[in-house]
Each structure stands twice: as C-alpha cells, then as structure tokens.
Amino acid sequence: MSAAESATAIQRNQVDLLDFIDWSGVECLNQSSSHSLSNALKQGYREDEGLNLESDADEQLLIYIPFTQVIKLHSIVVMGSEEDGPKTVKLFANREHMGFSNVSDFPPSDTAVLSPDNLKGKPVVLKYVKFQNVRSLTIFIEDNQSGSEITKVQKIALYGSTVETTDMKGLKKIEDH
Image 1 (cartoon, rainbow, N blue to C red):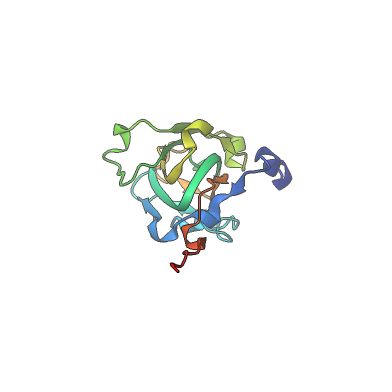
Image 2: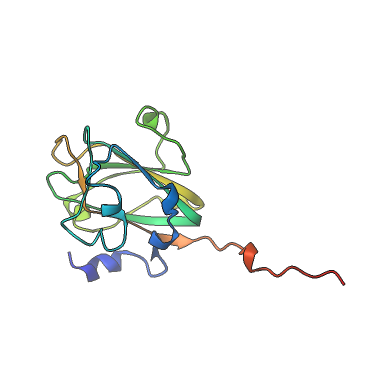
C-alpha cells in the first residue's frame, strides 16, 4: 500500500494527533529498554523501518498516551511485520493507571484484530462514538501474529481531531475602572 493510498483512508478533517500527545505522561509497560515506545510513536523514529518498539518479558504491551487537550479519535495505524507484529489490540478511552493485572477487568472501548493490510499501514477505523471526548488512550497489545514471545511494533499513529474548547489563556482580563 502506498502512502497516498493510506492517506486517502484518513478523512480530510482528521489530523495526525502527534502534536497533542503529552509526552511527559506517556508510559509503556513491558517494553524492551533498548527498543522503547518512542521508536514507534515519535516523529522521525516511527518512519525508520530499522527502529521498533519491542516487548520484553512476553508478547504483551500496555501503552498509556495522555493528550494535552481533549481529542476525538477516528482511527489508528499500528504497523509491524507479518510474523511478530501485533494482532489483537484493545483500546481504552480515558482509563488511567491500568496494569496487566487489571486490564481484563474493564471492557475495551474498541478491539481491533490487525490484518496484514493493517500491519502495512491501513488505518483501523474505530467506533467513533466511543472516542468523542478523549483525554487519554490506553492501548493494550494482547498478542502478536505468530504467537511468539516478542511483539515488534514499527509505528503507531493516531488520527482524529481536537475538540473545540475555549483557550482560557487567550482571554484578556477585563480591568476594573
């Protein structure tokens, strides 16, 4: 799939939400120290096919992404190889402090089983109604394509739009006369 084809699957008013990620709060459980989340999520790194996010102790990964403002999430791109790329991806909107011990206690906002096309960059369109006022997103990668011990993620991209809110800093204080 060419970049032009994958871009057409994203609706016109949807943008890459990379600029709205609160990097100071991003977490990833069970990531390999030498193959961390920034390889798959950060601009420049995620375009480099030689860089991956890899799981450490087993195939599962739990990723927490807070946003700097409220967003509407439309679709997600999760790229990886056909062998050790992610397979079952569960998404949770506005669920903080999740761990492997309690991730199965909550119903996911949406679940995607990634196809070979998805792993090459075809976006997964989400249940849009479930992702209207998103302050944070938790991504649980439950397993991978081959059932191997290590999951490798080449790229994660989130597409959607910001929720129009009033910028309180932009308002001028009215002086008392």
